[in-house]
Image 1 (cartoon, one colour):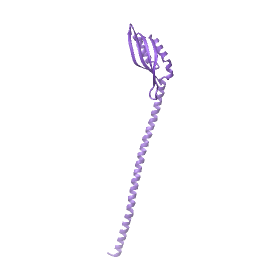
Image 2 (cartoon, one colour; image 1 turned 180 degrees about the vertical axis):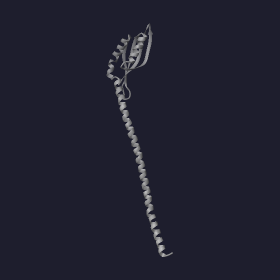
Image 3 (cartoon, one colour; image 1 turned 45 degrees about the horizontal axis):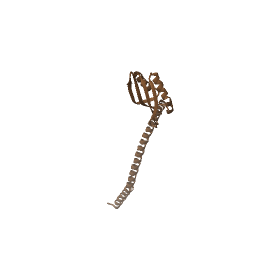
Image 4 (cartoon, rainbow, N blue to C red; image 1 turned 120 degrees about the vertical axis):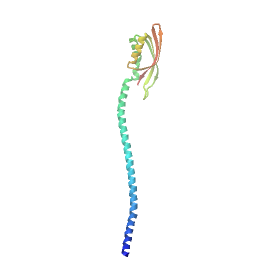
Length: 173
């Protein structure tokens, strides 16, 4: 082999080896850079999905809050204010008289309203009259403008009439 061929071969090998030595770290560096950028893209994608879910959740909450506002307004208007219970005893006595029942009434203990539950005032209703009239009175009270819950009704027969003592609660906002 001539010397020029050997020299040319050595030069080509040196240039090739030098290129590999220079390009190998460059390729490795580019590979790490691409991996890092791909990981950043994946992280941004996860964050975008999370934000999209959050925006959807907030939109549903806003929609639900509008519905809740309607119900809240309804509930506020359905239950009387505490001050409006002043007329409850007179209304109850008028209903008793309308149903031909003699009655007596007294307020009892009060439970203050909270943000989640209405307030309630206890009462005791004593009544006497016929059984049918007493049942009509109870139905009329339940159908009245007040939200009333009877906790106990003690009904006794006294001759042809009945006498009752009823414990209940009337609710307010």
